[in-house]
Amino acid sequence: MENKNYVEKDVFYEHEKFMQRFLAKMDEDRRFAEARLSEERKEAEARLRAEERRLSEERKEAEKRLRAEERRLSEERKIAEARLSEERKIAEDRLSEERKEAEKRLTAERNTSKAIFITMIITVILGFVSYNL
Image 1: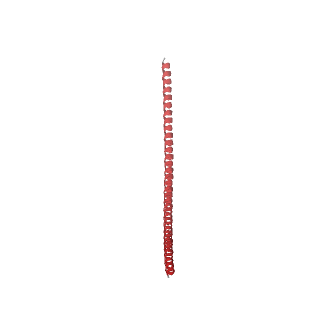
Image 2 (image 1 turned 90 degrees about the vertical axis):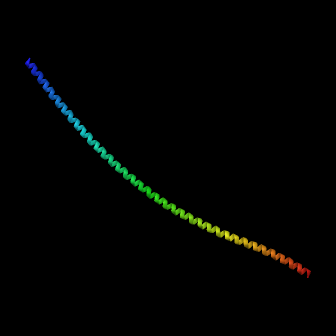
Image 3 (image 1 turned 135 degrees about the horizontal axis):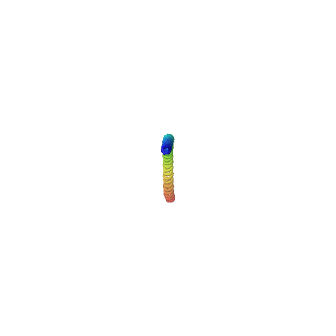
């Protein structure tokens, strides 16, 4: 009986040692998995920060290109507005000159008509006077 009790204690002791080794191995595996996950998380965070920096740089470059394009378009607009203003001034000056020339021609035509009318009256008067003489 004592031998049976001794065997049971030995089996219990071996089982207890096995369970302790098993639990120690599970703890070690858990710590290893946690360490691996922690490292993977750190690497993922580092990749995320690098990607955020890259995107931030790309955004800054895009904003810089946009501002440069806006400046270029603003300059082109100023040049186009100046050109349009100059063309408008030239057209207005040309129209003003044409109007002055047209007014001069009209005045000359009126004066010619008046001169012809006066000449006709003088001719009629002279004809009448010379007929009566």
